[in-house]
Length: 145
Image (spheres, rainbow, N blue to C red):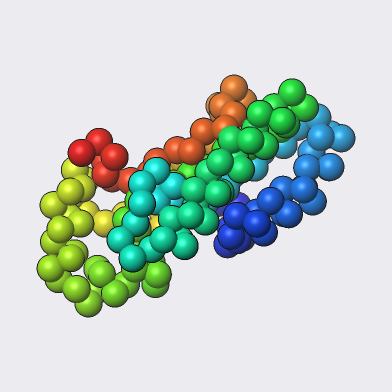
């Protein structure tokens, strides 16, 4: 999987500006941002996080609109509940909230970081050449409920 750079929406905007020149000049490129399920819905006690991820999702769409004619694909993945240090306080330390999360997941488990790899491989491969501006949920079925 390509290296991941964690950034907020403003830093993402600046980073896109830096990589755009080379990709547009070359006539090709693949950019995959990492947003969050909170790009689609508000969070609980996570207003700033939700707003920032909403910004990443909308900036992904806007840049895709601008850069698709130049052969540059700009897309994002939106991980759902994936076991990371950011949410360890839920899956490890809060059994009640963990049960609520698991009850909503058709996959009946938290995701692992490796579960995101397939979506990233797709979005960086030729198979996604006609995909522009999508925010792909990788959520264990969360949005389906």
